[in-house]
View (tube, rainbow, N blue to C red):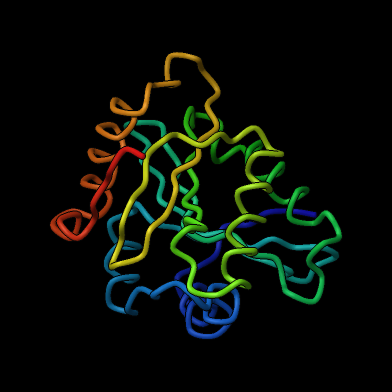
Length: 192
């Protein structure tokens, strides 16, 4: 398995087709917004390849100044989920040379208590469990983005980044401002 940076022209078709199947409960970014954040060099996509075939993808915000990577979307093709490929891919991502200077990895996981269906609640719980198995822990911080609620989970490489909930909320508020710019006003953080 290997991870490769995707080109802009490879990201847009994934967001237009696979994304909607992989994240049916999430509101997708507009093509215009995706192009804007790609051009700011804060948003990128990586393909996950096995035997030369792309089997998944990861999109994220990289804030090199603050040494933080936010997992925006991470998915393995539906027909091969449950085979340990997501675990293998996450391990590769965490060890990737392109992230060697990252000290804080943050994930947004749908908050199960806001799920509208049993299937959505089960999926949210599975994602939280997946992150927990890989040393990500719940931060006590929830973020609301465009009306959807996500629990923030994180994995840190240095203890100095293991901030308490209120300090982490402030840290992430600044992070969202740095990557979303003026659109950060649509993001609300709260302690839970």
